[in-house]
Length: 320
Image 1: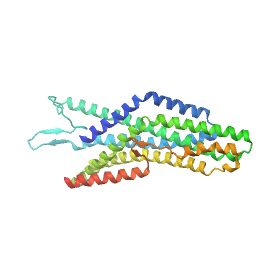
Image 2: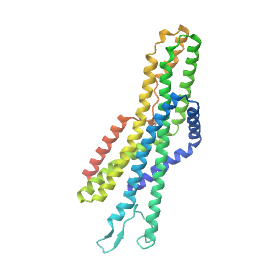
Image 3: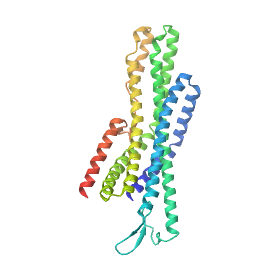
Image 4: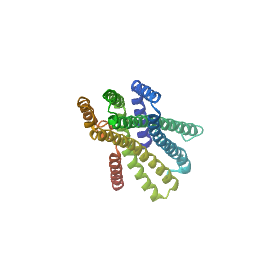
């Protein structure tokens, strides 16, 4: 009962955060639309590559979430069949056990109605989860595309010797870097809180699922083991996807920093070279996604999460 309740509260909280920040999210969508419409063919290819990564991650997330939910909420309760208790009372399991007061959920049609409602409720939760994850991944991957374009612009800065052309390029780069920073500020208003909840719930559910797999393995329940393994893969891959996107953002920020610091500024006129000082300084502050503005989201964080989940799982196993 703990896992469905924890997951439901977490997904509804994340969805509520996104709804409350719908104004900022709408502005971000408008900026993405504007970037695509004004992009050159080369830049559009960069955006397309990042969007393809986001699409693949979202597809795998959706398949694993709905697959795991189908196993957990439908196949697993039905595979248990009717259970006879020591007091000679026969019960049928529900996807999410709960207290229903004076309502007898074991009789027909009460059982069938509640069973169906819980399945539908689960798929609504899974849809909200996929939507929130997809939205956050889309924003992160678009920022990766913006940073890659900025890197290319910086590397092309010294290709022209005409002072007027160089001045125009510097102005464009500064304006583009400012736009990226503004885009990031909007993202930073809600994505860190969504990712913070994702991290906390990810660690908790991962260790509980690991414990459930061990228990069911001892009972040799193949169907339950399959359901929990699918859910475990879902949880781990969901956490990996956001950490992977965060790592790509960190890498692209590092590419911008290296491009600015290794720029052949000595080829530029002295006055124009001075204009690059602020650009170089700003590039030393990388854009990165955080969980609650506390933990940096990256593959290093993913490794720490898995280690923590395994540690907590071992503690659960020992105390029981």
